[in-house]
Amino acid sequence: MLNDIKIKTAKPQDKDYKIADEKSLYLFVKISGSKLWRFAYRFEGKQKTLSLGQYPDVTLARARELRDTARKQLAEGRDPSFIKKTAKNERQDEIGNTFESVARAWHSDHMANKALSHSEKVIRRFELYVFPYIGKMPITDIKPVDIIATLKLVQKQNILETAHRTLQTIGQVFRYGVQNSKLERSPTSDLKGFLPSRTVKHFAALTDPAKVKDFLLSLDSISGGITVQNAVRLGPLLFCRPGELRKMRWDELDLDNGLWKYYVNKVKKDHLVPLSKQAIELIRELHPISGHLPYVFKGGRDPKRPMSESAVNAALKRLGYNTQTEITGHGFRAMARTMLHERLNMDPHHIEHQLSHEVPDALGGAYNRTRFLEQRIEMMQVWADYLDELKAGA
Image 1 (tube, rainbow, N blue to C red):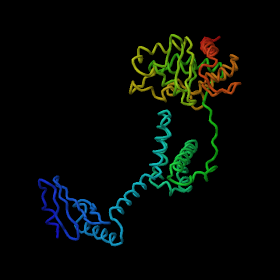
Image 2: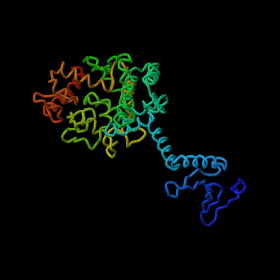
Image 3: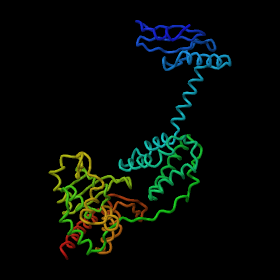
Image 4: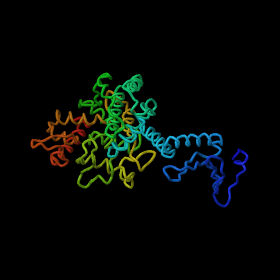
């Protein structure tokens, strides 16, 4: 029989060896010096071995307890190795069935083809508002009351929009769990109407010609590097989404023909933006600075990445504009949409196509990047000239 002194003094040899205890329990001493507990037994005519852990983590007394448990299982006609494996699988299933593990699996699958910025926002929202509260809970144990408590914490921070988005993505995770046999029913189906209605918030925009003139004049005194300056100046000319502008790539541009072609995640299609002479001039000014890099508007910290998504709004704030009530980078779209129609009498269909919105035509077709291209080329130049005239006081 073994005792602690014999175990402690057992030294590694030139090959692995065993030191027997009793009732088929033994210590397996490896060349490396590791000392492992093993229990030898026969089940249904086959010789088998059950691992009981490593000494000294598992003491002699504990090894004997585990051996005796295995002997009782054998007496009941059960295989100790099979029981151990089943318990391990159940623990792994439980770990893999927490809300956080299912949410991360959903995020990996669902966000595979989404914009990186959106993907990062979604997982960050989970990490801030959800995982600390229900992340470690088995997804099958989560009740509506648990989700309500989580969302109330978000509400208390006066961010109702975030609460609605959080509930929406939580619901998507539960539906993903149902579809992948993690649970039978989503508890979010009982939460419709729980949160107060969202108030529709429009992006701040300038649509009065006099105010637009003042804004254009103020750009002459804009601070910051030429990268940010030209991004702000291009915003009204191109009226694309701010994220699309800041991620403009040199390989998307055909400056000789005055076209910018890029992929719009919003509609999952390519989009063509005709470039006015004024826009081409502003872009060409940046070529000596970033022409050797992927992005036209290079990042301040990492030149191989695009500039910060807050750079344009920060520049507008430095000009003295309130980005909540007066103008934002996204507000250039509303400015152009309103003034092109009301002031320049442009066809709304041409405007909507230029905004890369889904616009069904008479034949039932949806958005087409080349539709009305000639008209849009003319419209974009008329728009750029109109802004110049406004600034000049015409």
